Image 1 (tube, rainbow, N blue to C red):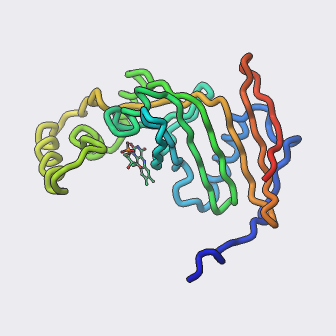
Image 2 (image 1 turned 180 degrees about the vertical axis):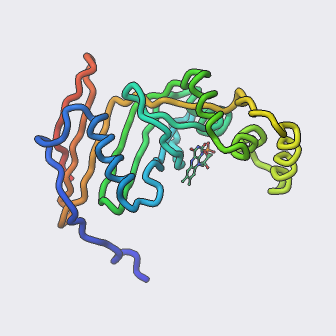
Length: 212
Ligand SMILES: Cc1cc2nc3c(=O)[nH]c(=O)nc-3n(C[C@H](O)[C@H](O)[C@H](O)COP(=O)(O)O)c2cc1C
């Protein structure tokens, strides 16, 4: 197959600077709800990008677990590759692509860790086996084989039979405080609609339309 010839027209709907909500968080929640109600496979999946000390970017998918106090929350291992990068440089970008809706949202901002209470609360709500997995997996580290992880899982699970499993300190949440949010709606002939919200120094969101 000639992938250079793979393309589709986007025709579902339009996006206009004059009829988006003045608050991008409200607009985000509206689009997220539409994604949740559509047949998107992973509507809460977002690609987050972080940068190394040398400003080299890296990306991976995580799941959005809440939008609270105007911030976007996800959970991970604080000692993972992304965790180490965020410790040194809190700048982050998060991208949602809902192909079924012909929509993309790009969020840029900085992260802070969620409170320990908040991380505890979410950790406690995860399935028991996922909690065990979070304890034993040295996320992003090289391991000898899958067996290493399987054995560690069995040993750790045996230690916790009947208990609620406390959150390990290396695992918890981050909140993205956004300063730039772009909403993209696919349109015919590649003349897509792009609406940008930029936060100014007094924390007011300014809205503009960008060329496709
Ligand atoms: C659909 C999907 C959801 C994921 N959700 C998470 C998540 O919420 N948290 C997480 O740490 N990793 C999640 N992952 C795994 C990450 O993409 C990644 O492999 C892991 O966090 C290690 O990334 P790092 O080595 O860049 O730190 C998810 C992957 C996929 C494909």
